[in-house]
Image (tube, helix red, strand yellow):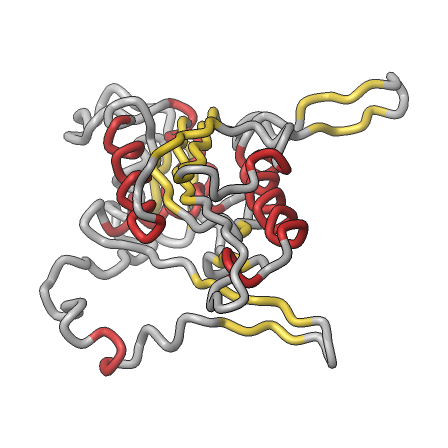
Length: 257
């Protein structure tokens, strides 16, 4: 699997600032961005290891779920903290754009990667994705409901004082007042999940067959017609197969400072 991440990064300290990129101390903001970049490397790249105490070495971990990732950090002028991010493994994309338009510079980066990646991701520089199965869940969802449906992550913040608390910050997506004019829940794009007894239940997964009350690996692959779907990277296909049958919790993205 290949994933392209594009992240707008801006910092210009101001007493009148309203956002973290303006009112935070540079050390605190740099730490938030480092944690953002580190989470991508630690959860999705090959930068994962397992200590083998008997052999006194570190072995590769989670090879079936690791991906080849590219992180593009888009900045404008000298308003950034790139000097504090040494070792984080990203490509620095310099621009002279209006800070409020940095998101569009990220879109240009994503557009330039079309045809070269399986997933394209845009996120802010203080968000941390802590779920290593994030893209595996997306693959499962897309296989079930098609590319026209979107699985929206939940952002949250963790509060330690005065008492531990987890706060979801994007409101209630089921509230029709929140999405009025922005979404159509009755347009028929979503198809309902199939029941286990339905032979089409595992249609996107040619090796998995479902029957009443059982699952098995099918050994007869030649008797079935080829699926009419675009070619998928073999690592992504394997991730989709691994995802089948697993009940996942909701996607979640943790906000940084």
